[in-house]
View 1 (cartoon, each protein chain N blue to C red):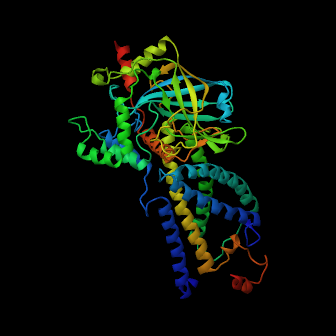
View 2: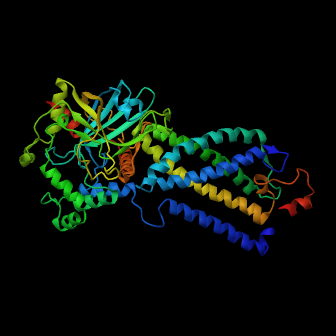
View 3: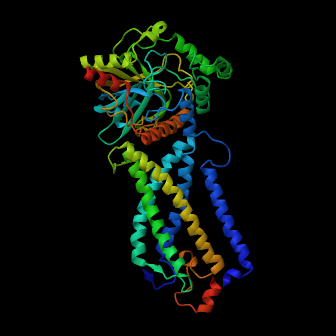
Length: 359
Length: 192
C-alpha cells in the first residue's frame, strides 16, 4: 500500500496543516479566537443585567409597547433630497409601535426615559423603510462599547431604585456625553402623550437625490397636536399604563398626525456621532404627513413580530458612518432572535384590555 | 452516473472551483458577520444575501450538469466503504449547497425581513411571517453552516489524500484533468 511510504508522512502533515489552518481561520472569523469583539449577545446581556434579569419573550430594550397602523402621505418635496419612492407624492401604508425605553414590559409609564416611535413604510414597488426613533434630538452614547458600559453602570439598586453612585460617578466622569444627556433629560419636557412628542432619527443618514447628489440628513416627526408635559416631580403617581391608555383613548376619537421634517446637515455638522445635536437653523424640508388612525395591543397588532431595524432602508437612503447604526442593527437582530426562540408573552396593554373585558 | 472519461466535464470543474471559493467565502462571511456589532456587520450582511442567492443559482446549473455528464468511476481498489462514504458525502454537499441559501431565504421571509439583494432588488417571501418558524430556521442556518464547514474539511482532506498519498487520479479528475482519455497505465501514474 502506498500509505506506508516514508514520503507520505510529509503529505499527511501537509493535509493536517491545511485543515488546522482552515479551522483556525474560521475560528478567527467567527471571533472564537483572537481579539475580543463586541457581539450582539454582549448588548442583550448588558440590557438584561440593567433590567435586573432576563424577561423572556420580550424585546431586550423598549419592551413595553403598543402597535398602531396608519399611513404616510408624501407631498413629493422629499425627492429634492432622496430618490426613495416613499418620498414621491403618494399615500403609503404604515405599521408601527410606540414604546417606552427599558427592558421591563410591565414598567410604569412614570419614568423619565425615552418615548419612542418605530415605523415600517412600504411602497407599492416593494421598497421598505424601517425607522426607530426617540423623543430626544440626540443620544447619550456615541458607540456600542459606551452603551454597554452605560447599561452596566446605571443598573438601578433594587433598594433605592437609583444607580450605585460608586459605579455611576466614575462612569460619568469618563463619559461627559452621558452627563450632558442626563442634564438635558432633567430639564427637557417629558411629553404628556405619545401624540405630542417629536420623534428624532437619532443617527444621520445619507440621502441621495435623482442627480446622484448625496447629503447627510437627520429627520424628525413633528406632531400636529400639542399639550403639556408630564409633571416630573410626581411621575410615580401616574397609573402604570398612563401614556398607553391615553393614546388608546385619543385614537378612538380621531387620528394623530406628524410632519416628517428632513433636516440637511451643514458642512460643520457632526454626522457620525449621535451624541451631538445639530445646532442653529438648518435647511428643513417638510416631506409629508404621518397619520395614525388605529392602535392595537401587541397581541392583536402587527408590530410585535417586527424588528424595527433602522438599517433597512429604501434605495435613495443609506447609512452614514455613525458606528451606532451597525450596532443597533446587530443588537436588534440578537434581541429579535432571542425573543423569537422564547415565544411571545403578554403585553401590559394586552393585560389591561383583558381585565376590562373581564369586568 | 459513470462517465467514460477519467475527468469531470470541464464546465463542471470550472463551476466546482467557482463554488468552492464562493461557499468558503460565504461561510467565513456568515460566522464573521454574526460575531460583531461593528460596521463589518452591515457590510458583510449586504454581501451575504446576494452571494447566497448566487450560490443557489450556481447549484441549479451545476446539479443538472452533474447528472447529465456524470462522474468518472472511483479507483477499483478503493474499499467499498470509502466508495459509499464518497457518494454520501457528495449528496450531503449538494444538499448543503442548495439548502443553506434556501434556509436563509426562508428564515428572512419568516422573520418578516425584506430579502434585499442589491439596491432595489428585493426577492419575494417564500414563507409567511412566523416568529417560531424564524427561530427554528435561524438555528438551523447556523447548525447547517457548521456541519457544511466540517463536511468541506472532510471533502478537502479526502481529495488531498487521493492526490498526495494514493495518487490515483481522483484529485486530478476535478483539477487539470488527465492528459488524454486513453493513456497507458504507466504514463497515467507518472502524471500524478
